[in-house]
Length: 107
Image 1: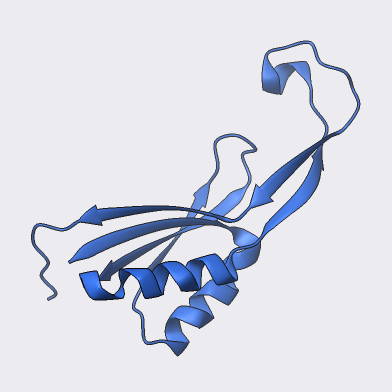
Image 2 (image 1 turned 60 degrees about the vertical axis):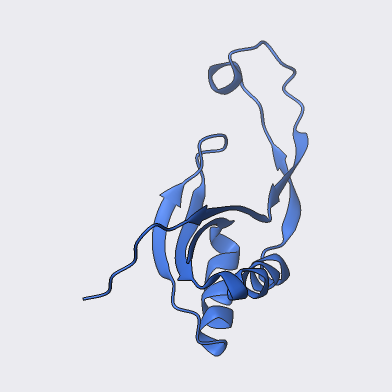
C-alpha cells in the first residue's frame, strides 16, 4: 500500500478530481497554500495499492499543466533589491510524494 501526496495548482484541481472519480480512485482533497508565491494549491491524499501507483501518476501528470506567468518582484517578497520589471516564471504542474504505508484501516 502506498500514500501519494500530490500538490497541484488550484486551476488543475477540479479537472484532476473528476479524472480520479472517472477511474474510481478515491482521494482526499485539501486546500493548501504554496510557500513561494503564497497562492492557492490543492493537495490530494491518495491511498492506493502498489500496482496502481503508475496509473495514478499518469493521471496526475496528464491533468496538471505547467504554465508561464509574470511575477512582479519586490524587495519585501524576495529580500533582495531587484528590478521592477516583471519576471517570467513557470507555475503549475504537480509535486508528488509516494510513501510506503505500514498499516491502513478504514472505519
